[in-house]
Image (cartoon, rainbow, N blue to C red; front, side, top):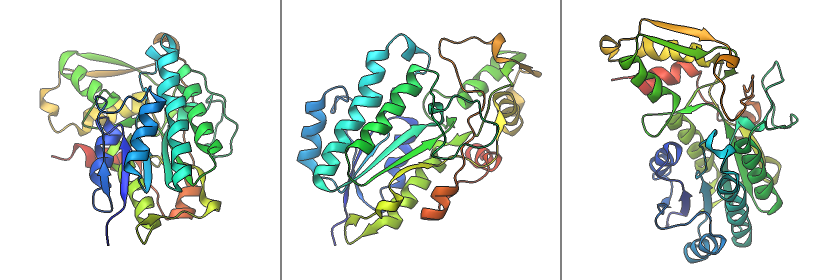
Length: 296
């Protein structure tokens, strides 16, 4: 039997790169690069989908420069909101499964317990608002769809908190890190494995079949929670090249001492119960993921 085709966008990003590898055992993966597929062009997106006729579209592409989005809202809107809507409409036309990767930044952080999927949304930034608009566009297309919100993604590739902290620890004797924002650091590979597990479980005779009651938003992020300061300390302690660090102190500071163009939620821990019940998929606790990521 011919394996189904998955159209994967954003394959050069930290999540997309992992998805290209985790999806390969269950499907043929078409992963056009940014030079081959212009995410800002609705015509290009439609042409790509109609040419390939995939069984599923996994959209891992995103404008993820959270602070720069404040001054480039049109670009963020095109990539994070308009593109997913076009892809979802094309997927619905084919009867293909649409999978969208989204973010904890759709919430305002005023909660004090992990957010369920149906909790009120109130993004604080252009990035959060455009990602939320992308979710809405995917749902409005009306076809089979899954939206996976995740949080605090890091990995060995791309620009992310882990790589920044490990670099700075080799350059500076002291790091000052925010300690009043709470979330769950999620390794990009674990996220990709979770998405692949859901798709593998939905594979039926060359198609991805998800019951309508499981369509919609699911939270897929690491278990547990910490702060950026707690994450930084854990990173430096687990660093295999710890002997090369110059850093001798990781100082906890409030958000007010580290102002940024975009506001971040104070608390954005996600409740993953729905994905666990629907698909039997739950990601490990964040410290376990970090240990696996940094293992020699």
